[in-house]
Image (cartoon, rainbow, N blue to C red; front, top):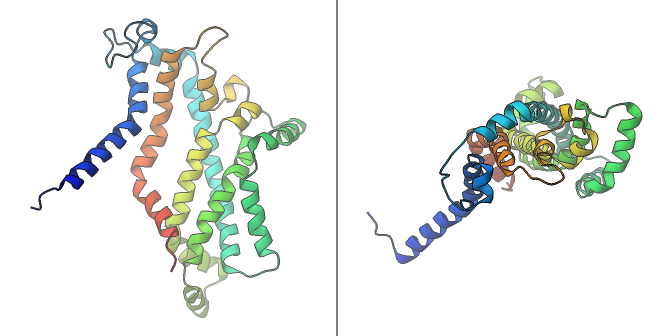
Length: 276
């Protein structure tokens, strides 16, 4: 076996330190979630293990604070947003990538420009529209979520659709395939890594979105996860034990998704960056 050089050992140490620094905040959240308020604010604040570990914080956020309901809301909203954005973005990206039409460049510029709009500018008009339509505190919030996530999804998919050889479509047309059948049977399967990656990134973005949810779904029964966690405080007290317990719980769904589909996410993003 090849002996490791000093440079190899230095790289290994750097990687370990980097991973530790990256993972440590989440580990500290989990550790803090099992501490009592006395341990959190007392002499045991920086202790890795509490002398009196407790699950009271988890019991409080699950049964008293409605975090499970917030998780349900976030799952439904994120799933609806993912389906809506993936279908819309895939159709739009395919048309932009494959067809030449007047105003194509302008359309691409507009899509890119929309993604740069600060949310604070959009909140007012969106709130007024939702108020007039009676859509406040509902799952219709998925529509403005699409305004945030759709541009990036279109850009990711455009790159992948451009890499699909046009000769495949021509061959399918010669074999008698209709445009829709060609799209579903040939184009989409080849571009699946990019579609899958954009869908996962859309889900994570919708899951973590805060400002729109805070403004449009302010009722406790309709709150999403980030808003519900931020509300675990009152005028004088911040319940850090409950906040860390809730944060540990709500991280589990996205963590599972990333761990299960990390290869697809990486391959989808990486393959989109290779020009053929």
